[in-house]
Length: 187
View 1: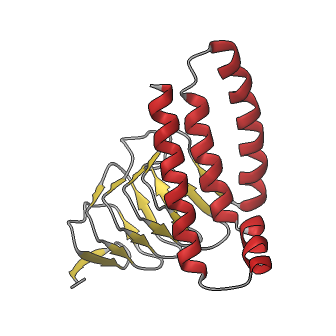
View 2 (view 1 turned 45 degrees about the vertical axis):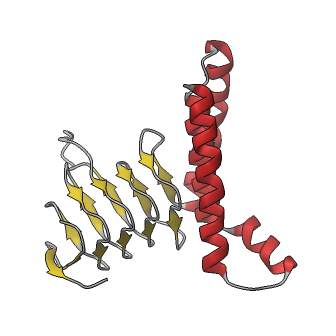
């Protein structure tokens, strides 16, 4: 279990980094270095992947010690960056956080998904959870969107800025509005 998780998360991290490199475009070595040192989204995705490995460590004493350190670092960075990726979530490779701040994720994302700033992706409020959202692959969630409840988002879906999604969305759709409505799109 641990070795499989380690292998999977290292592979996912390599793919995540390649997505960030691709979106950054061509530039000098110094600019690239500064970009990676200051890229909030990449830092949080890498911390999330590291947390998955820590939670899979089979040695109890080592695991508990590293979990404490991880949770402290997670608290500090999520507070500074305004990005919270719940360690219980499942996030596929190529996950991209385009902007800083106001991001809360508790649910499952497929491969090559991207989110903007101010996105809430989690359970319904009022103190009781009926489940969490799950997306397919290649999903884009626009700035300020709210995806809440036990719903499924299909593959190749685009969720518009400030949309509020509370119902399932099938593959190849565009969801816009409050509450969001589905529109067919050609990708």
